[in-house]
Length: 225
Image 1 (cartoon, rainbow, N blue to C red):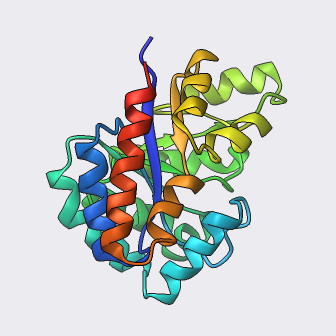
Image 2 (cartoon, rainbow, N blue to C red):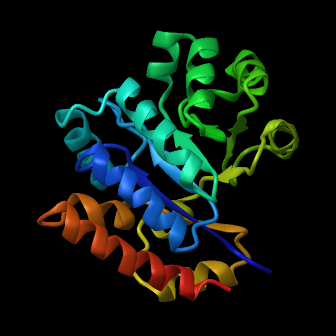
């Protein structure tokens, strides 16, 4: 079984030019999908590392329009798809139809909206399908079996399984050994967030951050079966 490598970075941290370079770098390192976080002023589902990353991005001027403009320039150069991770707020403010159309124009292939309740996804799924976007839905181990089947049928691209173990390990991965362990558990994909974000956001310069990101990404990709 091959396990997909899905790195996560926050758009605009430390700046959008660095994000553009990072996307190309991760693509060259063999990412199967790249998850790009739209910085939010209230990223309450994320941990402290990604919350701090979003705050830095917003302070640097990473607006929704600026992020989508950057993606529109970069995505044609990538061989792997980009999935946008966005909270519901920006979508509500623009309207689902306008937001999904803009995201599609930016070359994005899918959307993850972590605070979108499943009961309210019908209209949004329609807008996503109209723009050929795959809406990735979330489940947990405690989701009732019938609801899990329903969500699995409705989700596109892949299903985001949120567990305490996945949050602790999937987003707190620090070594290739952790990646190998997750693959051994039978995971179809490994999504690596906070430790990936640290490589860029906590470096002394964008150049150093990109170097650290490349070294880290290659070590994790090499660890996957």
